Amino acid sequence: MTTFHWVRHGPTHERAFVGWRDVPADLSDTAQIARLNSFLPSDAIVVSSDLIRASATADALGKGRTRLADLHDLREFHFGDWDGRHFSEVSETHPQLSRDYWENPGDPVPPGGESWNMAAQRIRPAVDTLIEQHTGQHIIVVAHIGVIMTQIERASGKTAREVIGNKIDNLSVTELHLSDTEWQIRRINHLP
Image 1: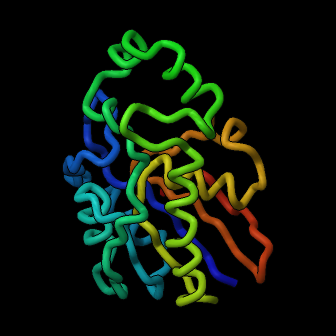
Image 2: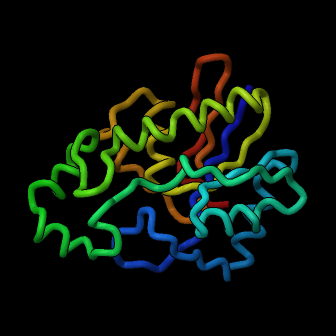
């Protein structure tokens, strides 16, 4: 059985869309990071998105574990022109598109960005490669809320619309098991 421990990176304290913008994580809550480190399996490999907020969080969890190179394809959704803009500003400039993006995720694309489906298609091969190269292992993947939700979608067989409501807190663990071709969801948004 291959077990994925999806960890959302540390908080950024941003109040706007943060997709491919490279903003740092606040990793000052050392007690929370220590609890997370204790909770995660010590023999797991660690990999992350190449954005600094995920990479730095993975470095904090990678001590004593095998740390793989960061992967570009594990980046957050690309919000394009919306990145760095406040949600209210986006809803004013793109009222129908922004509503569709959240209420009917899948095909709506922010200007210059990518849709949920496009992101899922980018992320899936990276996850498949991890499965192929590390079958039967524990894999800690430090990533982003959108990335984690695409994997909940994949494991549950539900639609993007059905999974978008899941809460995924910073420094939480979502644990997914893969046995042959069958996925199981063990926990979502667990805060150790």
